[in-house]
Image (cartoon, rainbow, N blue to C red; front, side, top):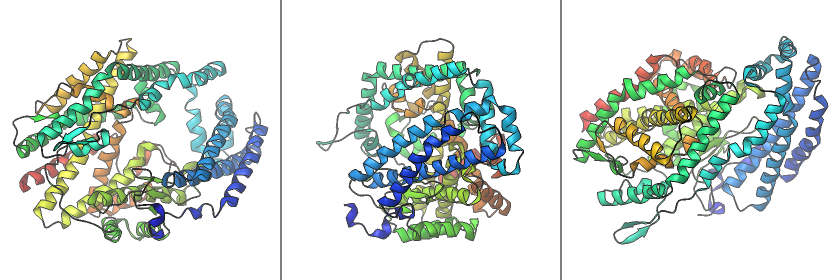
Length: 588
């Protein structure tokens, strides 16, 4: 299908941002004219409150226009990549962003050098909205180096970040999978389907052909992974942190305590529930021991059921009804004002996202094909968009954009609400089994698998910090050892399974994966309470959605009604998993 064949009501309307190219170019020329003015405030913007406000007003004006122009062009290009004019405008905005970045590098440095002046400015009522911004900069002071050293680090950043670039540019070529004598294209995406095949020989063939390629290039992958770990350790030492983990946590305004609390809950305290799940999986597969290539097999078949977009919204309205009318209006606005680009078509970017800025709608890109996954994807992205919309309506520009640490909560709460609704409405045992199976699988992917990855990543960082070399054998042997512990004797490891660690891009993201577990655990607890119409929880959660980045991530989650540092949160989340597992066992 081509884009021009799709009804307009199923395509997003970007005219909310710019009616035509002339209005876009008016903003572009305005920013080009204003960026050089920023340097006029270098060395003086902290001298008095009026000067500071004047400077911040100019900075906000420029940033808002740049964000809006970038949003407009990136959304347009994602659905029409052949649009040469938009490609050109998108490239020009990238250049503008680089120019703005270079012209504003002095801001943080001057605030750090003039702490007393900065704090004095915050005493003026007109400057209260800048409190978080300035305090966030000031808290980095113990880890800021001399100007000369900072300049060297900035110059070296391209070299230090090159390992991930190398990794992302490696494109393994996999041998095709042979099914019924026919060749089928294999990569990480298509493998997901082949690993669901009822024929075990096909699953095994897929698994081997996938991971043998990682084995062939094991030394290259080991080199990029080691370089990444060295980069993280180098930065942490240079900036006077005790470890790479501490440095990463500092950026999220959390402590190492949270990281280890998450790992302990998943890998120790409640790991027995995952092993119980594997025992059920074995029983349904009629196997004494599972193989690696069995683990993505759908143990319950998905019922053949199709949904229209109208059907999807009826379910979404019902799933989110306990939020109240204010939330319902946002869902209706998203549909009526055409925030959503629904249909897959030639050239359109794959996947789904919610994306917007302070001066645009929070747009949603998805590929709705009428299956249950399409409905879950839609309510997930609407969760992000509602979060963004609430934040914009209740926070100023400098405090609306929430952190990645809390970003997945709003979307995952919505998914949980939809799942709880569908399970409660289901009168068909086969459908209910499928839904519970999907819910269990989602929880395992985020709350068991990610802490396993996080532990592996943490050990690698520690080895590098202790000046232990990371050869491919060191890396893969560790991955194999941890896998054996993780599966608890329920899975027979394939000879290539140890090389699967090289397929995980998240190991290059500096302690990112455990955040999925925090988000899912928190969302599981919040969603269950909202589904049961806990009025206090609903009130707290709506406050959270409206708070943007006005508080630290941990404080925001506490505002939402859960404390991520409280072990009871993880107890409740994993007990929810256990209860779902017991319900599933009864049905089978």
